[in-house]
Amino acid sequence: MSALSHLECGRCGEKYDADVPQNLCSCGRPLLARYDLDHVAVTPAEIKGRAPDLWRYRELLPVREARHVVTLGEGMSPLVPIPRTGARLGLSRLLVKDEGLLPTGSFKARGAAVGVSRAHELGIERITMPTNGNAGAAWATYAARAGMRALVVAPARAPAFTRAEAVLAGARVHVVDGLIADAGRLAAQAIDRGWFNTATLKEPYRVEGKKTMGLEIVEQLGWRMPDVIVYPTGGGVGLIGIRKALDELLALGWISGPLPRLVAVQSTGCAPIVRAFEAGAATADPWPAGQARTHAFGINVAGTLGDFLVLDAIRDSGGTAVAVPDEAIVAAQAACAAADGMLMCPEGAATVAAAEHLRGTGWLTGDEEVVLLNTGAAANYADTLALPSPELLAPDAVLPD
Image 1 (cartoon, helix red, strand yellow):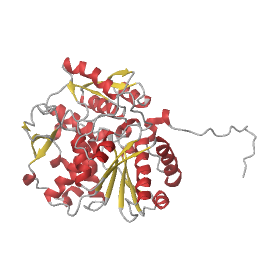
Image 2: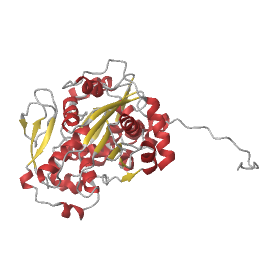
Image 3: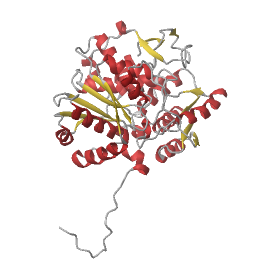
């Protein structure tokens, strides 16, 4: 089923056995799954005839036996044109990959499906993680599906709906008065007691689930790459995964040509990757403690283990990193919903604001095919939506023209 070969450190290149549970490299950096691509016999034409879920790419995923796959039908989210928003921004070929339609309402279902499936295959029974909301809901849900136990720790400001999802899925949920790093310190206590660490980039297989976004974009475009991919970046797993997918497809010979320019989008309230990119740094110093704050809570990540991988992906592709203010995110969310019926989560709306900024500076000329990633459903953030209050009418009122 899988062409999985081994695990390899993304920094130092040290190799590890993929068939025992692994977390970080001895150097403290993330491990990445590697595949024996010479033994991938499937063709794009054969993939076309498979079920419309992410497991259609099973040779490039780490689960060795089908009986260990834990699924809720995740994958193949739509790639939707937003022409009126594109016209407003001066972008004639603007598309949205809408991840809000996946199980648990976000792209985190991809990483959870593959990560939980592989953990299940390796005999892991208890998982834990800190979460800004969507990841905890997804991993708790897929753990329940697999018959595993989950313990998640979330900041108090994380969306209430996603915390409720995790509780209803049977997870142990703890809330901390702090940020994601504070949640991580509490989750570490569970790790010391034998719970397996599934925090962002601290196990190798979440990236493999996220890379299916890249695989799907290419397939949905007829096995070709777009010009630009704009991605809301917190921990950066999705951007790392998309780049990894493109590299593997190029190595297989299924696609050709230059890479899309990859754009990492952050909020001006928490922008460690943008700051490092602009400084020409190879890694990103954490955002100052207590100063990380944004309406787009999923990208409120002060520091990430994968900073060097994100920065390499951006630079190698000729891309860039952009920080947008929360006011622009809120405005973009409302404008896109009204123009094209596409109500994005705050992180997704940040990509619209970033595209507008890049068009204004001339970095985007207007002729490119641009794919924005909407990473979740706005309903997951219902408690943060800025909703107008309609006028209350009497039952016998006459509607105005």
